[in-house]
Each structure stands twice: as structure tokens, then as C-alpha cells.
Amino acid sequence: MFNLPQSTFGRRSFLRFSALSVAAGSFLMNPISKAVAQAVKEIEPFYWNACVINCGQRCFVKGGQVIRVETDNTAGDACDHRQIRACLRGRALRQRLYSPDRLKYPMKRVGERGEGKFERITWDEAIKTVADNLKRTVEKYGNESVYWQYCSGQQSLVNSRRAWWRLLNLMGGYLKYYGSYSTAQIGAAMPYTYGGRPGSDMSEIGNAKLYVTFGGNTLVTRGSGGGKGYQLECAKEKGHPKSIMIDPMYNDTVAAGMDQWIPIRPGTDAALVEAIAYELIKNNWVDQDFLDKYCVGYDEKTLPASAAKGSDYKSHILGKGKDGIAKTPEWAAKITGIPVETIVQLAKEMGTTKPCFISQGWGPQRQANGEETARAIAMLPILLGQVGLPGTNPGDAEGNSSLPAVYLPIGKNPVKATIPVFMWTDAIVRGKDMTDITDGMRGVKKLDHDIKMIVNSGGNTTINQHSDSNATDKILRDTSKCEFIVVCDNMMTPTCRYADILLPDVLGPETDDIACQGGSNGGTTSMLPMHKAVEPQWDQKTSYEICRLIAKELGKEQEFTEGRTQLQ
Image (cartoon, rainbow, N blue to C red):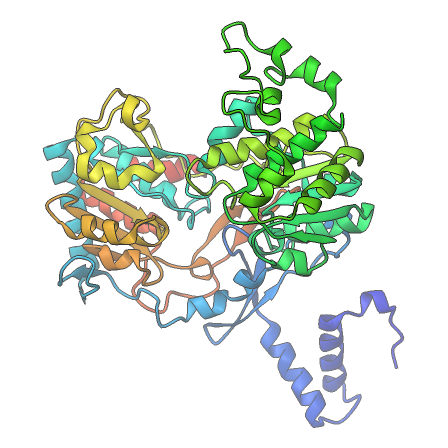
């Protein structure tokens, strides 16, 4: 019998070794050995692929089908050399690939918009319909009337939203948005506090003595094996900081090993922060030297000359400001639902434990006036002087390492107008009345046209992620307002029901591409190869191919394909 070191004798090695033993006649083909030999056959061939945004994984193919999605295990599990493992979403890719909800063929609407009634058409008809409506809309209303809808489902280098951007720019551009449904409020707030979006790597928690997070449910929202979920566990193992989660829900990250969970009434994080600040100031736990040297407006002596008396942060917290309300734990307890003694103890731990790593997830800022919630939380590390030091964080979500990949060139968008991401329904109904003063327009003083055409690819924002679905449904059903909607996706989502033309896209295992790190990867930078494992089962096409065909119909094919030549 062979004697192999245990470290080199993994599951796959065992399977291959066993199969070879069978072939050599080392033992008879009993039921177990037959199963082992069959398992070896099923392992090969495999294809590298990626679940775009979060994961890397392998697709195992047999008989032209993905029979299993297995995580990449070519590297070790050490915290200092993390491997990008497939999370549950990545492991479920096979179910998505063969889901009955897949979009199989190009279709056109035959019922009322939003009713979800479609009939199959040819690609020629679908491409011509989209091209004709794009051309008509631009000629009749101008490029500002063509809106690219927010999405986050297409982030590979070529077969992605960038193909659509390139196509639309070749036609004179499109109306853009700024902000995002994920981080619009915190993204706007942090530059007013810090001048940018600084964020410490998750690994810095390993250098802290205390870790406090507001809504940072990392194991669910950033669960990829190579990303922040695993990185958090590694950091906690390294430094064993006391960890505290402030969240309305007893979430998975709490259950996995946080030391304390403080439930809070949703939307009241700012009140809790101000009560903590009251205790920090009252007990002289603030870092006065840091505040004097680096901050403006903490107390009256650092207020700008133009500021009103009593408008400093300290006066506001102590009740000496305009509202005259002292932000005591008793005051906050009634708002947050957190007991007074819990608030007092939390403030004491934060004020007396260094280093202290303070962060927030994206949930607290997703509300009206969410910018102020984000800025309130960021005040805690400022008050404590816990910024820019080992084991600290500025109060934003944890940062990511960046990898400057080369994507498909999109060209230049001549349209200067940009609307807030959340106001596209307003731009359908009263776009020509929207201004920079009243509605936050950027690039122009006012819009010249309402939105008349929407291009939605790789996203489910139009009816699912946007708020007030009843009002949105009413707006979208009125074809005299937004006259044409094209949706490109791989599943029959709620947004698809509002399409005039539905275009079926492929999934990762059905195309060749490259994915470049997502927001889940933390300190791991990576480029993930996506090899075509199987042919599309039905009549789907990649986003790049769809856009190329539309460009061809519009006489722009050569200009469009030059983008891929530049990429190569």
C-alpha cells in the first residue's frame, strides 16, 4: 500500500489514486470502487468560471451540462493567503442556469405594459425594433430622453453593461444617473466629513481591542469565501477584540460569534450616536488634542467666523444649541428602544478601549435623511481620535483593495445631464421641470426632455428595487409617457414584465469573459477567468453580441467592434 503524506492526499487526490488502483487491478471492482471510479469521470472536464460580483468557482461539465458547481480549492485556507471560494450564491449558479424562469427567446409585449404577456419573435425582429425605437427617440426628443437604468448585475469586462454604454454613446449619448441604490446617502455624506471615502481594510479589526459595527452584517452581505466575510473571521481570530453589533435583527454575523448584540429601533442610529457622544463629552473621553488639531466645528473655538454662535457640535450634544435638547441616554432610550444602562455601558467601552474599530453597513443610510445617519456614525471615531491608526476605521464601511482592470471602452457620452439615481420616475413625469436647484440635476441647469426610452440590462431596479411600486407601476403602464422600454436579462424578473422588447442574456458558464474583483473581496485583488463551459440551451445571446447586432442595424457596427479590438 502506498504511504502518502496526509497534507498532499486530499479528496481529489484520493479519488484519482483509487481509480488508478482499480485500473491496475489492486482490488476488485466492488460497489465502493465503482462509485469512486464514476466520481473521477464526473470530475473532468472542469472549467474556470465566476459568479460575477462575489465569487470564483469551477463549473464541472458532463454531457454538455453543468452537473455541479464546486468551489475553487487550488490554494490553502490560511488567513494570510485566502482563496476566493464560492459563496452560497455562487454555488447556486447551476440552479439558476437551468431554472424554469430563464428567458429563453426574444419576445415582444402583446398585452398591457406590466401585464407580463409576451410572444416569441425572431432576433431579427427584436434587434430591428430596438434599433428603430432608439433612432426614433433620439431624432424626435434628443439624447437626454434615453435613460440608462441603474444595474449591478453585469460587471465583467466585455459582456456587460459597458457594451450598452458603448452602443448608446455611438448614437449620441444617454441620460446618466449619479449615486446608487446601494450607497447613495453614505456616498454623498462621507466627502462632506472627510473629503472622500476612506475606509480601513477589514483585517485592521485584528489590531483592535474593540470592534463596533452599525448594521454590518458581513457574513450575509459580503459572504464570499475570499472576501470580507471570511476576512472578518480571520481578523477576530487574530486579535480577539470584543465585538458588538448594533442592528434591529439578530443576523447571521451575530449568530456566528459576535460578543454582544444591541437591538435598535430601525432608523434611530443617529439618536444612539448622539447619546454616546453625550457620555463621551461628559466623562472627558473625547480626544481633545485630535479635535483641536484636525477638526473644524467640534466646539466654539474651531467654528468658522461665519457660523452662528452655538452651532458647534459640542453645544448641540449638550443641549446648548438651537434646539436646547441635551442628547442624554435617557433622551435616546425613548427613541431607540435601547435601555439607558446599555447606552451608558457602550459609551464607556468605546471611550476607554483603544484601539477601537467603528464601522457601518449600508443599511442604516437607506432611509430619508440617511446622509445624516452616515455622518453621525462617522463622528464617533472622530470624537475618539480613532482615525488613521492601527486597529481603527473612519466610521464608513470597510474598504476594498482595487485592481485597475481594462474594460471594454465605452467612448464619450456627449450628454451632460445627470439625474439623482432615485429620481428617474420624476424624470419620466416631469423631466422638463427638473432643475439643478429643485432636483439636484448635475451638468446642466435643467432637463430639456422627459425620459421617453429606458434601457435596462442586468438589473431589476425598474419595478423591484425602486420604492413605491404602486406609483411606479402606474407611471410605467402609461405608454404616452415613457414610450419604449427594452430589458435584457437572463431571468423573468418583475422588471421584465414592463418591457416592450425582452432580450435573453446568457449566464457566466455560457460565455467567455473575465471578471475583476467585486466589492466583496476586501483585501484580495483578483481577476477571475470565465471559460465557456456549456452552450446556451435556448436562443440566448451575450450582451456584447446583442449590442453589436443593434449597432449593425444602425450602421455603426465597425465603430462598435473597434472597442473590442482596442481591448485586445
